[in-house]
View 1: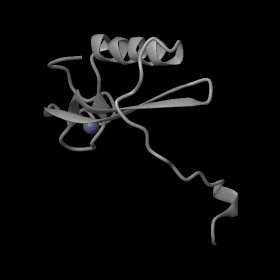
View 2 (view 1 turned 90 degrees about the vertical axis):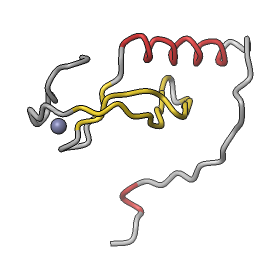
View 3 (view 1 turned 180 degrees about the horizontal axis):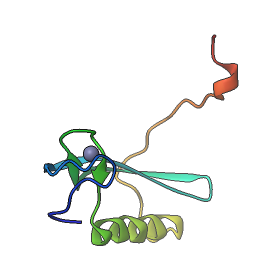
View 4 (view 1 turned 45 degrees about the vertical axis):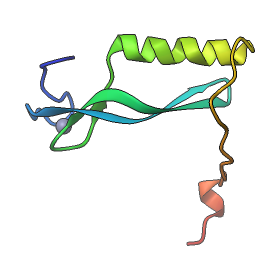
Length: 86
Ligand SMILES: [Zn+2]
């Protein structure tokens, strides 16, 4: 992906940034902060290197199999969209 155009809008400027990555598997979530990515300067689409995503998946698997503990936990609210105020 490095050096390519944005797949969604065709913009050529992709900036190196860090962001929050939310990994999801089997109804479980792992939030990883400060993950390196390329972000489209026009539409904001974010691109992650396959090595980066693999590392996150490995970490999720380590936590899911109790080989390590996450650094911290957060409590999150959940809503069904159909129950939201009109
Ligand atoms: Zn774009």
